[in-house]
Image (cartoon, rainbow, N blue to C red; front, side):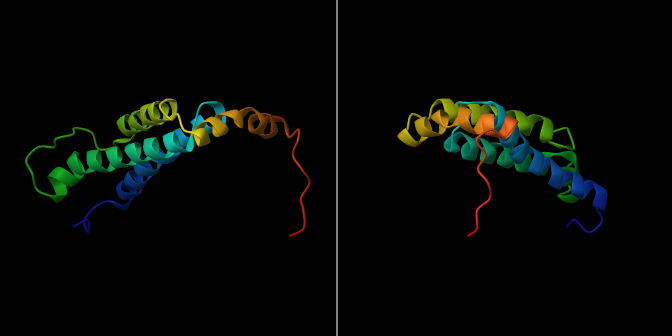
Length: 128
């Protein structure tokens, strides 16, 4: 099905999916103290699935490969909208996480943030 597609475009689609999931999680995990594992997982999956669905409904796959007359989603690259879904999903699922594990993750943020920004408190390497 993808035999006649431009390889550069195909690489762009792969980066759109990766950006929709990975970028929001990385940025939020570095700077937002209320992030939980539940929020990262569910928000990341929401962004990734949104990117895949929008890609299928876009002009390249929906029109050029599947042969429909017009695309349902008008843009070739879905990352702008799917990243927004990921950011909102991460935020929503993190703030609604009332589990004990989520509370512990929030409590550990500042110690990790200080270590990551300054190096203070980082232990020496150990032999295993």
